[in-house]
Length: 342
Image (cartoon, rainbow, N blue to C red):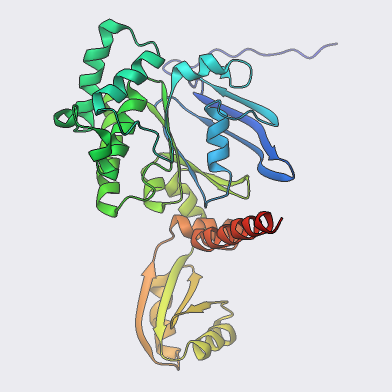
């Protein structure tokens, strides 16, 4: 006798979860013998700000290139705006905007000419072009430079214009691949002001790739990616809470002696760099006074820090993002040297 399926009524006042704008299942990409993306799966909801956080070479840009139909996946499935990226790339492109990691503006055109050219490529109706052009230029505060040649713009101004261009055809989702790389901190802060404003005004879904912790903190959810795999995902607050332990940094006269004391007296495995001894412990504020009272080596200063996203990355990978960046750079240099010798 077949099992009976029960169809329970939807509780009053509750709505079913909206369909994700991006849905990825077991996505993989191989370049020859190199496995750049290794079976990643995730969803991005409508209106959400979602980030891929990880070092260079982690698979961030490869994944975003697949979602934007610039690369075909080796295996797995990806859907954007409900459309399969491999089966119908042209339809996907109508729903997305993309700000590339490297500049792609035409330096010999004005800001307005760049936007008008983009509008023609995306077949924005002529009746809407002027109004939309005015809107996006105002949003990124470039209205007064609309007639200026792009080659005269600063790096920050070019990035703002690229964001405006990505919004010109009113996409459902805007992909930002390392949007502030190479910019100074002040300009990065300004760029994020514009990004947050566009979210409020346009209700556009954002998909961001970054290796900057503060940028990932701006997002509602993130996935930490390393070596082509997603190692953790969730809200920034939940990921940091899962680490659980605080970080203590001691500036001491004799780091080697401090390391030995921590290991012998407290069974703590610490690390030392430039005279600073670092380790993680639960309840740091209660532990620190007891430690300072017993530590025999002279302590010049102590710093207690709550878990950060770098701590989350370290807890899942055993290294910081900076260390991962360095090892990735070494691999790239080694590969370049091998090709050069050939």
